[in-house]
Length: 64
Image (cartoon, rainbow, N blue to C red; front, side, top):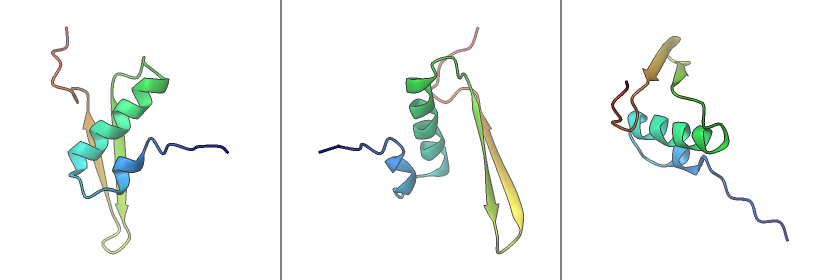
């Protein structure tokens, strides 16, 4: 039987937005280690507002 592991399952947990972004970035870096930063945009249909989150220092690493 095929076993599927949902690598983005943290996105369905009651975590902060920052924690979800860090989790998504880690998943991306497992497959694409050259990804240094990500941006995520959330749309709120009630207010019709887009919110953009960008972080290039997700893991507290010092950039050179």
